[in-house]
Image (cartoon, rainbow, N blue to C red):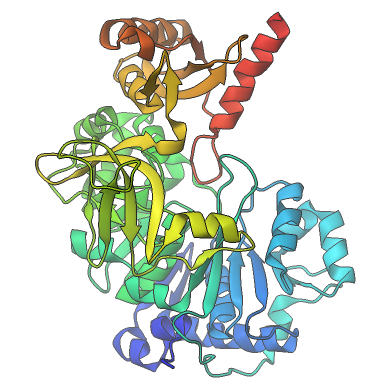
Length: 511
């Protein structure tokens, strides 16, 4: 059997021969070299063994984005256990679901989060399944256990040995565990090649490490390519991002459209440091032509679109420099195969829509404890994304929404994304989201929600006028509502079920 350990691939002797003296992370005033990080990872692996963790055990990591998180998470992988990074904005019910679903042997929890969930912390302590990073308050202290821990060699994992879980962000319901294996570490950072990011340069990624986009481009890909990652432990505000760029001069910045929109709301003079960044990349949610244009006007640069998913962990497609329009999603990255398939599994005609299937070197092995969903979506090395795409005349893939969001109105299928694009093109509208909602007769109808740049009533009127002008009758929304903000997951994805609930409550009150 081929031996491969993802942590050793990034921080073993061969990797350290290339990058050992380079700075891996800058976090505030602290700088951690690759060599220092490798030692911390080995000590973390030794501490896990001392706490009773064995190869194959799942270990939850609930910490802020710091070098300590990186050492703990990679220490789990080094030890042959399975790392599960937790979103620190989940509810207690969601934490409990993941604890049960993952069957975790241990939870490494930063003290600030342990204090925030005292009941859950106490239960884990009684069960001997917790270690506290920081002020331990009498509980097992993660830092103390590491102090005298041995530094074991990396566990001899195979390419298909589970290395980590990613839990989905819960846009439609309970988070589900996506199982990734050690071979995934060989596919890291293709986006870095596209923008020419080189060893020794710096990258800033605003997305958090529990999110696939942040885990790849903020933590693992920089280690794979000898790049220095600028870390910020907490959730960054727009001014924080500007300050980090001004202080550390990253060559590239990876963020989500929501952050770019917030930056554009800052006074123009505040954006001056961003003009020195070489490349901007956006992922995690759909882009818009409007955002691309506004960013170019304000900063003098384009935003490249990047498409991926938790099931592939690493990015799948990207727009090339000089080609970003906001409409184009991109072209497949190196080593990634994609196919469009119609409802019969056949290739659609040119310029016709189809569901995207992906074959990726970092494709997950499936969903934890969900064999039926795994069989339905993972087939013969391919994954059904359930995203609808069209390939344009230049060979770029253009996203047209989700197959499971198609709504039949007046006997014809409608993609809610069409309405969103029409509304978002209006100058009074900041953002738009469309969801199906049953009317009083139980028939699916479309509800359009908009947020305003200035005046809510003006945004609502503009969206209504645009839909009237630009859409056929069966595609127009039955309801248009203005909201202060669109509800989102911690990863920035719109929680459409919450929008649906807003209108359902309104309709129920009228009934």
